[in-house]
Length: 283
Figure: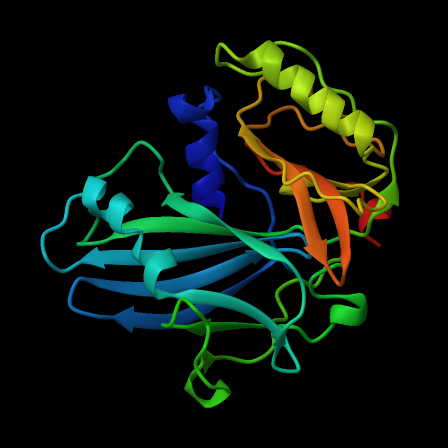
């Protein structure tokens, strides 16, 4: 995880120019694993999980077995196509996680290292229920080679209940979230700003979880979902909530999600470097 953040902080594609190494202490937020899936085209070996109730990063090595270049690997997306990540409690997928397409740990280096690409994927909890605490305590991550997840429980490749998310980052009431025009780098920045502002006015985000990885915002409920889903790289307009003011951010995702018959609007802002969240917010 330190290598990943160091790469982000020093990668031109994400605006990183610090030339610094990440030394954030991720103790209590990660766990080593060793799970392998192999077929005629690829071998994927999952190495570690890092995260909290709202986001899970998973790290894996991808070995191309037919001489595929990185462009072909991206097109094939074997992690999503062949391996399913299930969050299960009592044999049921019990809350909403969205998978973000994996990327290289070092985003600008597409060369193989010892025959593999080092990759990182993200799983985002878009419900407003903590993933591993409260009523979801005891939730497991299960892996299966069937992307549809329709194998029987006996055929799932699994391991013990996750214990890596030792720290809690609960939702707190938050000040009104405001967007600033011109924070996006593309030509549609102002139009996007208007869409965001209108969306936020219709579904105000009233709760926030501050984590080392991102700020997570939720509405109180949205019974008529808009089906709105955006992704935008952000440069400025940093959001300040509960005394936490991250100095860098590289991606935001926002939209709405259904869970237990209730919809909520959400926004999460991923950080380019981990934030040292005050202990008062994580107890």
